[in-house]
Every structure is written in structure tokens, then in C-alpha cells.
Image (cartoon, rainbow, N blue to C red; front, side, top):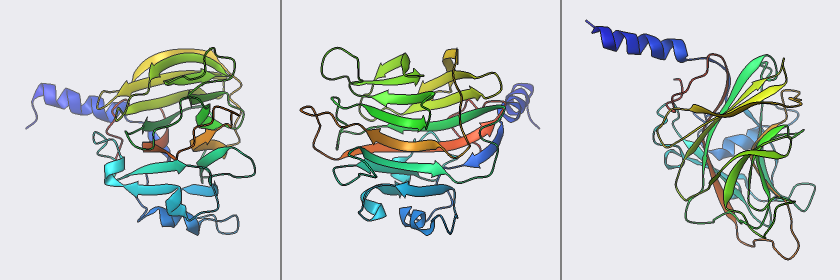
Length: 261
């Protein structure tokens, strides 16, 4: 028989869990080669995969249990997304990005875009280049890393949350520290709020709400990284970025890093 405290905790856990509208946690994928099954003529799987370089999929995306946040027992594996000088798509920008493949209403009402992100001690991202991370086409909200146009100096090692191009939160991006994120987006009232934690800690409201355009067609959120060129200051080596626990839910917000099973 459950004790009172245990029962209350269990009920709170159930109540706090939202409804997953789109699941991008890679749990149903054998390897990143599954991404190649998707095409405009054969829209299968959870991701659209077309923003990448000319190399094999394993040059840009790889999956492994070692790539996920260990605290997220709802995910069986995470993704290592790589950009390098071959990862160019219709531009000179380095970019490898995955787009949700779904007909769910991930652009309506109040929804939460979840993901965890980190870097490691190898293939370190260039601090002299602007990186746009987990962004919408209109860039109403996104993460950025590295020197951002308009800043002083020549480099920046901060991870920043941006609203309409304005920094609202920042922290130094240290190696092997998982940053857990939820974008709370109210598409009805055009507001965005930032939830954040590190490691195994539950998400807490960190910044916002702020007004934004909240423009999305439901197929324009980019999981991955776009790096802008910067003449004379371009980093030259490949960069690895790690992602875990990616999904979109309707409320109430799941604050636990252990994503719903």
C-alpha cells in the first residue's frame, strides 16, 4: 500500500505530465540511416531530413545512448549533430538541421518545445561565429552561441536565449554540461517564455513571458545548428552538438528531465 507522501508524489507526477503532440526523441530509430528513408515523395518517420551537406547521413547525424542526457530515462538515445565545411545547403552557411514531420497542432494554443543540448571537449564549437540553434524560420525565439552580430569583441562563449533577435538570458557553454530547455509558446497571445535547468534538475521558469511574432506553419522548427560565415574569423574545424529529449507537448508542462514514457 502506498504511503500518503508517496501517493501525493505519484499523483503530482501524473498531473504534471502534458500530452506529447510530436515525439522526436529518436526512440524508434535504429540508426541515423533511418533519416534517409524520408523524402518529399515519401514523408515517413518523425523528421524531415533535407538540410545537410553532400556527405552520407552519418557524417552529419549519429545516434547513441551515450549521446543523451543520462537523467532522461524516457529517451533511449540522443543525437550528435555535426557541422563542418561540407555541411552546406543552398548557401555558405554550415548547417545540419532536422524538421518535425507531423500533422499535429504544434503551432497552435500553448505548447512546449523540449530539448536538451550540450557540447563536449572534442570538435568544440567556434566562439567567433554566430550559431543559430533550435530556431523557427521567423527567428521569433531561438538559442544562439558564439559572437553575435552587433556585439563588441570578436568571440563569445555564451549560450543565449533570444526573442526577436534580442538576448534575454545567457550562460557560458561549458563542456559536458547538459542544458535542458523548454520554449513555452503561446501562439494565441503571441508570447514566449524560457524554462531551463542543467543536468538532472527539473525545469524552472527562467525568463519571460515576452511578446513575439510566434509565426510558424508547424513545419519550420529546426532541431540542429546553423553557423553563419564570418570572413577572417571563421573557425575551421568540425563542430559536434548533442541533443536529447526532443518533443513538443501541450500543457501542463513536464518539468522533469526524465521525459514521459
